[in-house]
Image 1: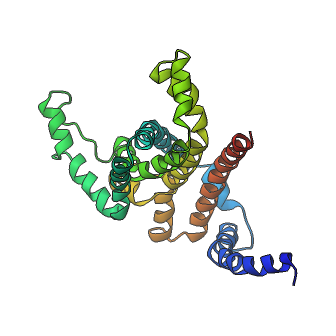
Image 2: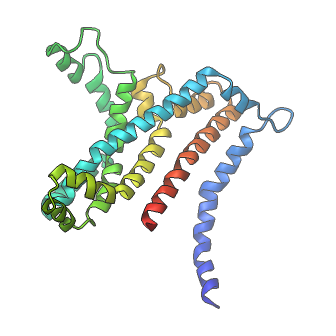
Image 3: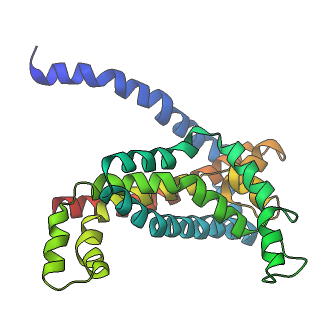
Length: 274
């Protein structure tokens, strides 16, 4: 048996598992999305794309996912840089602090934000006491609440993705930039940030994908008034029992994420080859 045959046999179990866990459900969803009483139909997609309400839900999902990704990158990059440049012992504790929220259920963390952001919660009360907001100020059931909760949930993915790249950047490159007259911020912008782009891209892919497909946190913090696409799919399945329309929405979400992932993957591949 040659090496190619051996490699094929080694890969087959993984391919079979991937087919069962991914391709089979995706195929069934595609078939269901075009099923109708009289045979295959695109009526479910036409209904979605022709309804301003569902287009608004789709746009809100994309807009919030982009905003959450940008905020996570803005927080995750300096945090990852600090973690990469401190001593090994302190870095270990910082990594533990970043990973620790991942050991708690998303539902539990979201309920915690519901307590903090409710009308009588700690954050609105503090803002009222400082005179920054009025008596009727509320954060719950707003897009702001969704962004706050999702950033807290997804920030570790961004931070750890960037950390893996920044730790491999030689500190002597920054020292050389400082020697040539760059300030600390200039060395970050001209040396560290360009080299950390692959980590930022990888973290952005994770955060955007998880954010666009998230259901629990947006549903609990946004409520029924602020719908995202995952919540709309859930409602079509559980309330209206319109499974073909829910499958069509899932296909649109899946295709939309792929349209974002492919350019990102090509950009990451081009930078790594360069």
